[in-house]
Image 1: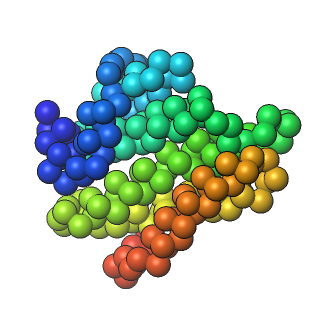
Image 2 (image 1 turned 180 degrees about the vertical axis):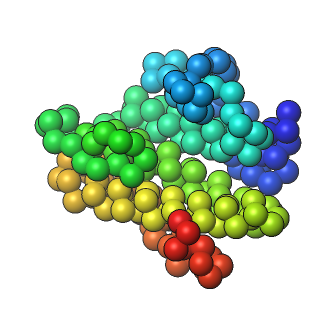
Length: 187
């Protein structure tokens, strides 16, 4: 309830997307007690997640996973990448290198993560606001860097190149936004 109230009050676009997209939540057990989540590729609107550590993390999980759901729906209509050729690339959000198709998924999901922190940093207070600024600075940069890798991979279809260009424009404009002194270094 607290996460939903946070979304409706402060992140209304995400709340609308969640209301239009999510039809099922499946509990998951995260290894080592960490928080984890996943979006079902072939069951639109089905999300799995472990118990998040609080309402902000729960709301953030929706921001992340709804991006995956939207992208997977788009991928059912049009291919954005060429078939994987075995090459893999560094992903700043995972310990394992990813094929271009997986990296594109991560870029779009972390566009949602950066967007969540971008808005949340303006409504949070105190330490939570400092953390939100740092997370915004971190995830906008990470997603932009990975987007550049995808763009330079030679593995995008023409539709994929147009899709990624729009994503990159958003991330590039966010890189121009100011964050408080010391926040970028903390990120």
